[in-house]
Amino acid sequence: MQKIDWSILRRSVNGDLTEKEKQEVEAWRNESGENERYYQKMKNFFTQEKSKEVDVRKNLKKFEQRTYGKQRKIFIGLCKYVAVFICLVGTIVLWQKFDTVQPEVNSLALAPGKDQAVLYTGSGKAIVLESRLRTNIVISDSLFVEQDSNVLNYEGIEAKGKMVDEFHLMRVPRGGEFSMKLSDGTMVHLNAETDLRYPVRFSGEERRVVLSGEAFFDVAKSGTPFIVELNGFEVKVLGTRFNINAYEGESRFETTLERGSVEINVKGKTLLLEPGEQAVLTNTGELSKQKVDVSLYTAWKDGYFVFEDERLEDVMNTVARWYDVNLFYQNPGVKEIRINGNISRYKDFSVLLEKIEKLDIVHFDIKGNNITVIDK
Image (tube, rainbow, N blue to C red; front, top):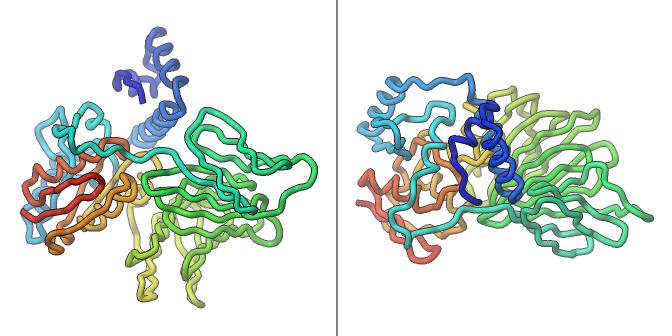
């Protein structure tokens, strides 16, 4: 992504630009799909956060209690322009401050993830997808799908001659993310190390997809139920926005509802969610729900890591998928250190590691893509 003055981008959200600056922003956005994608995420963020304020004194007090309490909790993120730490309380407030921070140790540079995925057709054909401005992905002689930047669009799909009736698999690798619009207009944002199996066109009495990994769904309203099938349970909706985190090997699966209603079905058990609630299914089969700050679980799709009272191991697992690194722990006890904070997903990994190291609690030994967490 080419350089541009961040303050100009920030002011462009409110339309507060000179004619020359407007041309500069327009040229920068048209330069690549990555630039346009970054701009849209920034615009969405500030539109959502425009009315929110941060109580610095209250958050600093909470930070001190967590940092020096019995559980040794730490906060990621130093604000360049103020001399205090601000502990995150249910919203993202500091991500832009990292845009001018450069890693101090270049040898530790590990690039963030990017738009990439592999599309597998019903015939087994594998098509590598990368971020582009606009193109058509040819599926077969009678079928093509439109790709616009990092979105693969099946809505209004047209075929010449015989309609292909088949299922496709979108596979996003570690270090990747991608988005798609299903044939019914449902938007799906896929996180790193995620698979989604879906029909080219929905038909019958339900709209069913199969997920492994993490995805945010904005389901198009319809009289036909939309069902997300996972390993061990189903999420059933009509029209709603929700996030599912269901990585294999994790100790729990989470479904977090932003808007609408959701029905969770697990081996005969049914659980209904209202906006602001999260369903949790443990690996022991226990199903429960709780009130949560939804933004903590959906920030990834807008380009941010947000952690509130998270275990270090869970934090590191999350970022490891995005940066495609392998983790090792010299002392397993450090996994229980608690983390609070936020940072852009598009910063070099070394920036995140340096913030943690400066707190003098753990040290990271980096050899290629292998990272060993060492207790100080």
